[in-house]
Length: 563
Image (cartoon, rainbow, N blue to C red; front, side, top):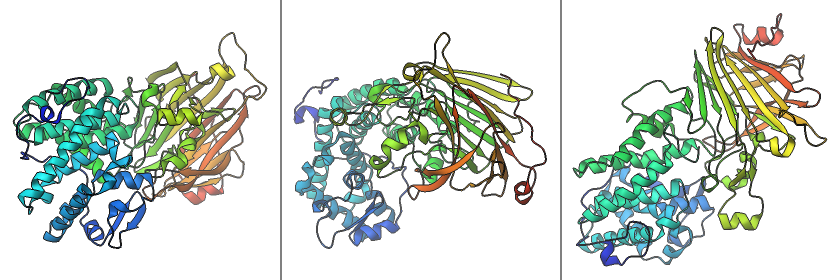
């Protein structure tokens, strides 16, 4: 039997007994589109926003237009679209494409041999086996199973060298699937289950968040873990407690990160998530309870008041080995009202990430304060080190993030602070938020102050507070330059005010759109810490019409924060 912790093994020992039979195929929760089967049959492969047409050649021989496109092609997730069409033609097309892959020299390409790509391909081949093998002969059946066996053998060799975080879990999930779905794998079931359980206990935090602090990791993992739980049940094998516990913790976290329109808050590499996939995942949540207010282990807070939702990042950066997608967004928040998102972070695009990665990870791409134009975290900068580490992990950032929550008759108050700028600039960023109980007002105060007994370092003590707006919000600066009128898609009107400070309206970009990056606006307040150490501001839902608000406000009241 294969050793429990790494090491090489022979094929015969990897697959004890006969493996020429597929016992069960796991369910694929990802949404399939039968119309895309016609495109694939016509030789048009559309992945990651790029189109490649075969013109009679093998799709695996063509130069990929992007790395994201190649990963999607070689992961074979597109087989589900052919299965959705469920015709003799699409089944034959699926077999022909798999046969092409099995005989193609491109199987040795670097991207094809990445552990996370191999894992995705193995799971896809197992999940779509009923469609691919349905009308096949015995010769193709055996070749198909041998191909899966080769993938699994490679994954067993590579598991300990796989990048930490989601990729490593995906490899272990694939190994667990294979042991359950193929015949005569009793010993491998035990070994794969043990390894997966250990990794789930390490990576899924007690509050249900992932160790990377990326909300998208929950979506990616639950899409595979939920069918895995079903596969255990279908084999009449008790799922490991660690799997059940991880799912039970992760499901409430899905609700925690959701805004009223069903979209996810954009923190730490989160991009757009298909709403139908989220709905499918949440259908497995038996509790259907309200989201919790505090996720202390992952480092996030949530305020629900009336129709208003505020989600705040109150955590330190994740460990360096899982921080390649993490952002410098400490104390950033997102604000929504009902089905309308108002304040967001820029997020990350679902494709072409490398073009935007440096910008999207920086503090100015988040709705928080940035000091001296710098980020609150430090990323690996040397290109040689980036190549060695396969990315740019965080190597420094806030060590101490304070947060204190209090409910009073005026609303819910959250007092936060982080020391990400202390070492280099000698200052601490403090942010206080107060949400009214009826959800019509959010007051805030941001302050920059030196630590007790120290002074601000350097000659430039400028800072900027940014509030990135969702593209659906129409913003116009008021004539007094102290506020901005915000008109939401449902025609609700909100007003942003900073009575003692000039407010600018600048261009921004919303990276997490379903159709790619979109232009939007951001509210910006700029100050000098030596002259003005704090800024008070508010978002208020107006009871007047848009035209009346635009004409002017007759009365203003200063935000009252119990500081």
